[in-house]
Image 1: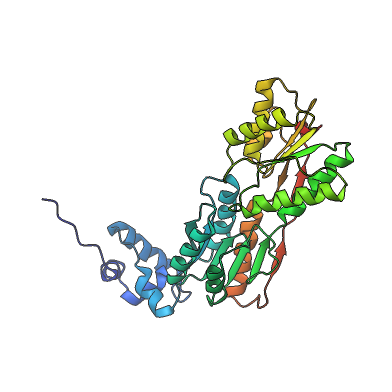
Image 2: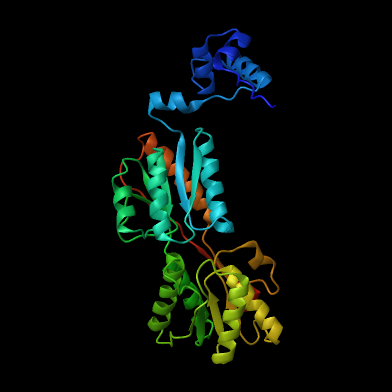
Length: 338
């Protein structure tokens, strides 16, 4: 029969370090009243007996939970991972941790997660995108904590914003293609309402084509988000079969663009000789593809870093008004459109 050993207590650490339990508590909270020498002795004593500081009671007294809630659409998207990395790195110096919720591009699921996360009273909440259900919006508006919407520039922000216009980013790519003499341009993806950022990219494509007086109907659906390389390949196949005179195609993401590129290679269609291909996101795969894919870098890590800095400014009282920080994506022209 296996018995569960009793966990060491704060009193055990205090006895080993020769200090009071209150000093142990202050040391783990990095209270400035505890010297570095004393803190080091306490930490060594704690390590020696495997003690883990229980912050629950301390947090109940101070009304602080020391975590920031975050919702993201996808856990295997490199860009969202980079945003989380920038956010986490910016918060860790303050001892703040992130509590992550995964929405799978579903605003109904986002609503459920927001309720669950707010019940735990985070110091702030970060959400991806600016479109939410009415109930989710009400919960965020009345949360009583900093709310930061990222990866978007919503028309009616709830609080703070760190993001960019997905539509404007794609418009810049269309403008460049047209300036280089391309007129028969298609768009793959962004057909499902679940991916609001993909939808905005498609909207930006249509608006830019119409502004140039060009046909904006070369739109190929690629399925629900996230669009995979396989789905990008299938969509490219449909484009080549139905509109073989297309000169260029802009894909909703680099993954779908890579799939489109491989479909062209499978069919012997020269890129960029016969058709240009571009993606979105500046994933590693876009840079190492042959030919390297033209894309847009939305600076995802910078979004996370600036969000973290904003949260600390708000919590410290340095930022009292709603901040709207606009990130400027960069158009990267590579071999797939030359």
